[in-house]
Length: 324
Length: 312
Image 1 (cartoon, helix red, strand yellow):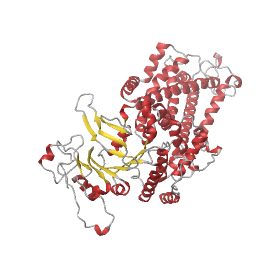
Image 2: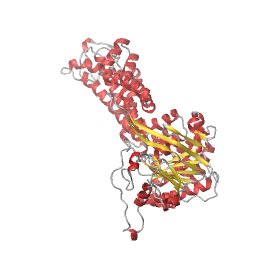
Image 3: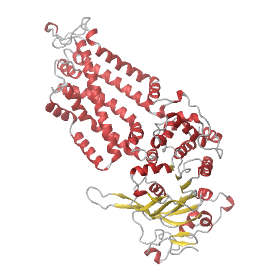
Image 4: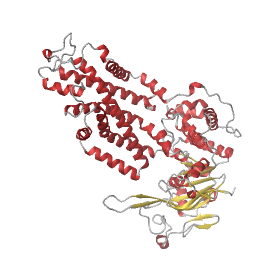
């Protein structure tokens, strides 16, 4: 369980809105700012946070789909930035992604057969058309779809079915690591459950490791082994799911968990923890802790000095005054 | 609709655990394999105005090709006793100012107009699509230089630019192709570039990148096919505009040279007699109108046929 499969060290991704032709200030957004995470083999690692906190960017940076500006990503101890483009291309079969929007993630002009044949055409160019078709049919049955769906176009399916096709594509080359980028957020709740169950069945069957990016805390609780809570590009708290939900150390985690709706009407009157103030602009971060402008526990030091991640009871917490 | 989908989703079996990849032999039927061409053709057949357009284009093409065999008059033979005659039994479209049979000239002119319409429009669309997709997909310096080049082309009034090119190269048919292609690619490249910029951010393109698909393959497999409806429309729109530009060039004396019976030339020659012998200008004008409309109908039908959302 403790073999590290994917690791990031001080990963940074910045986006810059370039200065115009006639000068003006170049603005830099640190979408991912110095994030280090370790994902162990066969675990489900969840990345949570509100919209715009950089969780999707982190997922894509790990797959090298967006350029990084600092830090490293290791896959089985191999630094991905040191790989040649060819080596990276062949490593891509080991790491795949499932997207949020099943309507945008399938090329509308390709039939299901062509969509699912693409992994094989890319990595197994010598495979015969007949073999490819057999593999595709097998993939479709793994995700619970009939093989005659091959002839159809993506728009002929419902969201849940499309998502299954997207999952089949990610599974095609027997990957070890899959980034699930809000993989169920766009689906109906009833279908979310089906797809989540499918994902966890597949995990057992094919010994997969998931990086599960989501803003849905009940999903995290349901499937994740480990959680990393992100806020404005930075990891605030990292820990085992059970512990972290039971006893959050970082104030942000506490408020995030408190904000999740509870599906129990008898608890309607539970104490609400509400934050005041706005999220600071990611272009213009406060000097100290980036949560200090909203944190009710913030003290002078929090506004001056950015906290480093500290190890605390097996967790990493970026806070000067954790809620122990 | 939504409820139906949900029900069918529920019905789908979940995978039995322990069932590996490639569990059963799956028969793949021959007719499973369908091509894009087959699909498009079937959808196109259902569209009546597109079929009419196709028929008209085919009719004019056949007529133009068989012109020397079906016409009783020669388009170049002058007969000064017989000038500006109205349509009659001997001359169905009448005669022009030199007594030449107008029908023969219009049908011969179809050859030139078809070629002028198709070849430069095709060349301009190809050049524009490739440069536009490269510009949008690769970005950076490639984008900068291609777009600045397009700006230069677009900054000139197109007729003026075509004239300059024709003056420099000399007036003949081949040079008309070159001139009209150079004038025409820029707007296509702009349209294709903006489409590419939007498509590049789509998740299916990202999925292809995550699979390690090569850039060039992404362009040809994912980007260009999704630009195709727009390219199709641009292409059909540029056929009539190429025909019109040729007419303008011919009018200004740098296009088709008399006595070549190009439609543009016929209209501009006939306009001097628009009150005394209106058919000399109107008939070739109507011919242009019919051909242009036919191409537009065809283009519309083709665009709908290519669009997967329009099917069934």
